[in-house]
Length: 332
Image 1 (cartoon, rainbow, N blue to C red):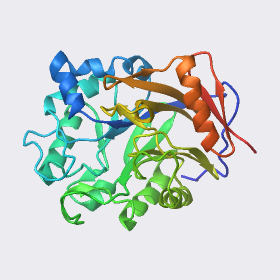
Image 2 (cartoon, rainbow, N blue to C red):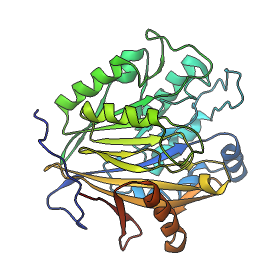
Image 3 (cartoon, helix red, strand yellow):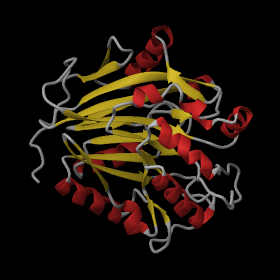
Image 4 (cartoon, rainbow, N blue to C red):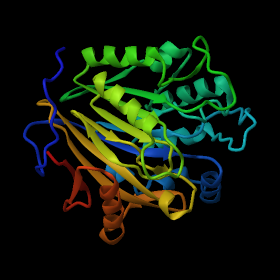
């Protein structure tokens, strides 16, 4: 399949033709303070009550799962160890997630077996586990989603030191962003799919701007043919950028999380329409996280979030829409 000669981000409120719809958020944690909320209510689905209506009718809904879902519990000894009840996978499926990244610095919290168990629990509820596998080749491979409007390749990787176990290519683990195997998988996906989307766990926690290492990796992914890059791990919102035809969200912030500091309670959903004529429309919805649960921010709370993002995103403007979302546009 030939690559498009050019990819432009339109400023119009609607674009002609059909499109594949993708909605993405940041980090989902189901342990620590979030576990306390779930156990106090007895219903993990309540965490996603503000999100499910936003996911309805969407072809692809993805985020980063910041904890294993494993029966054995945490097995790695370090300051932050997470592991959630596998039964809660059903709430993730019911919320509307279709793909979740397992490529993060908590991938090994329940050991290698726990990582593979997590992937099994997600598949059982109809969610694609991205960025993890029996070995590095399998972890790096693309997952292809067929939509009525074309094929979307989804890949996930982590660009952070892994905690607890040594990463070995022949053993189970998350996809390593620095591995040539990952870039081989990206380039292969480029030849097979209409669009390539990569979600990356990277950056510096609680820093509202992208590190040079993030920028370098984003440029390399763009050169390899990635159309959309979706970032997480910093636990705060980071800039939006366009590299050539590639749209980059350096960090969407948290999604379901227990950190109560104001910057970490602010988050984003990205909604991207991938058009056959290769002119995606990108929109953002500001969120506020209250008692670990996210919901759309009203205009009074949402506009300051967007304007702060606009202030750190060079050459990017945001335009409010009637439904609470904000259109992303780029200066020539």
